[in-house]
Image (cartoon, rainbow, N blue to C red):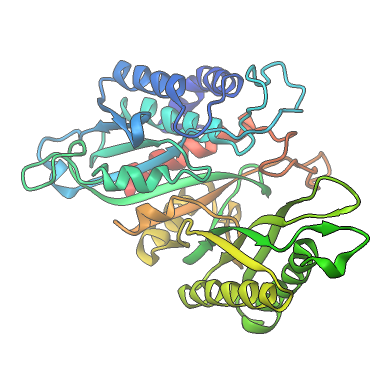
Length: 408
């Protein structure tokens, strides 16, 4: 027999599926989530929640449900987070609810994350709450750092006497967030204490040489040749400067140069990303990157221009908050459906900024279906044009968010 919470979630599920599919049809890029934000505000106000708008450069939203018993707000609020933005990808799912915006789609499941948090708000508004809950709907996770912006705006600080007054209700004392994960089975969740996702730094490099005729390379300095040497040498950072027991990924994602087959161009540009898990490795990778690029370009008669773009910090789960997550998740959905992640993933997440302010835990919500024989069915990965968040994952996500709000 389902629990009262499960029964409430089951009653809300058809409406939540409709919301998720509507959000999927109308994706919005980072800091452009106006329609999504309006839907969130309408939903929260319909529940009687306190609402604050205009955060995160305009589209971020805070919702707040106080504790049921007056005075219990003094305990501090449990914060629950969802990201709202989509990606500049042309959708190829073939769903009847596919994106109506050309070149933009929810390829990372933020439509599912937003729906889960709205579902949690719906359910929590109907039950006894031993402590207050703050709902953080943030823009621009996909490279825009919306979490950092909202933290700097005081989203976690509450509006009680003695606080900055820039948030809502009681200050947030602990935070939880989730991400739909295509390599985890439906019905399961997974996390770990410590680093879960990597720090993300990006770079742009332009190598300038001397343009010349392709038949007379000795009269110029070849920026393409220099770039090829540099890109190859950059992998020595991972292979020879970082411990084999540590993790570092260096990827060059695009190269641009030239206008014709018989011209050695003046310049060649390339862009890419570096992912690390330890602060000292992050520092080392940056130092060695500049050394390799500058020295290799000079050795071939060229000059390097480097633009370094510091990205998100490591998403590191605080020990006590994560142990609470594991205990609550195991008690809610069963020990056999809660996995401990063996190794961090080298993807990045701006949920990391919340962890710099309050004890936080981020977890993975399973999206991968299994066949009748119990074998996992191949599932498109995040950021692929065929990806779609599974509606079957919504009830588990909503239930865990509710239980964390009630028990953490």
